[in-house]
Amino acid sequence: MSLTEKYAPTKGHDDASHGHDHDLAHHFDNVEQQHDAGNLGMWMFLTTEVLFFGGLFAAYTIYRYKFEKVFEQASNILDPLLGGINTIVLIFSSVTMAFAVRSAQQGKSKAIVAWLAATIVFGSMFLGIKYFEWKHDATLHVFPTADFNWTWAREKHAEHEHHESHEPEMRGLVFNSPKVPQSYIEKDSKNPEAKQARLFFFLYFMMTSLHAAHMVIGFGIMAVIMIYAWNGFYTANYYVPVESVGLYWHFVDLVWIFLYPLLYLLGAHLSAGH
Image 1 (cartoon, helix red, strand yellow):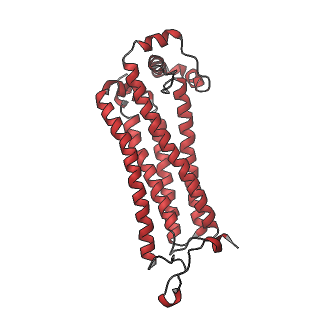
Image 2 (image 1 turned 180 degrees about the vertical axis):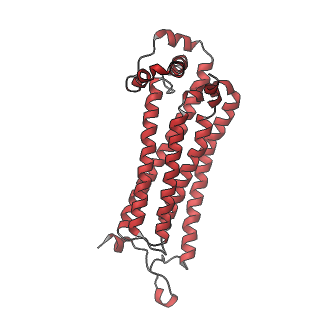
Image 3 (image 1 turned 30 degrees about the vertical axis):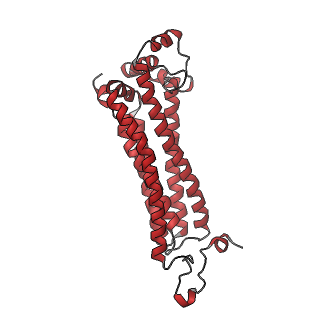
């Protein structure tokens, strides 16, 4: 038995007499009702996601106004260029996803597979850039763990900003994170701003890692849909799963559109003033 035959939507008990389409599940009256029900379920799920990320955005906003100066300085540690490149990459992934949904509406199974594969490629590029960015963050010791050191991070970032001739040397730190000297640890323990900076980076890594996790989940869903599409499961009358994953992916992209200016551009004016 083929995949298409095994998982095809069930035919109603009296489809012939009621004119049911072969793509219509038996508990729906018509294709439009089935389509609307699928979309409604996805929108309800996305509502819970909005509430989930909304709590993190609210926490960030509250502490951003409470510790404005330090949050701006911490934001300036991040690389807005890499964040901007990732924003463009995700926008391209949204475009390819839109083409995948359009192909599903037209009943073009192989085109669905191609466009979803392109979406995964762009998403993987985003995660690759993010990996190297996090790797560089680790060299500055801004991960909110036991070796977090705000004094070290600010000093090394200042060296990078003011001594462009040493940039290759600084780039080398990406793969060889030095241990923070004891003197920096002592300075940081006496610096009240260190705890505020740690809070910024805790929120930064929490939000960006959760966003990345949502992308990985999206890859898995798209991979399954690609298998079904390759076997001709979706038609011009039934493409709800493709449209649903499209809504999910656009939501993930939209979250990043908000994260980028909030996290990366908050302290942009500081670098302009150096």
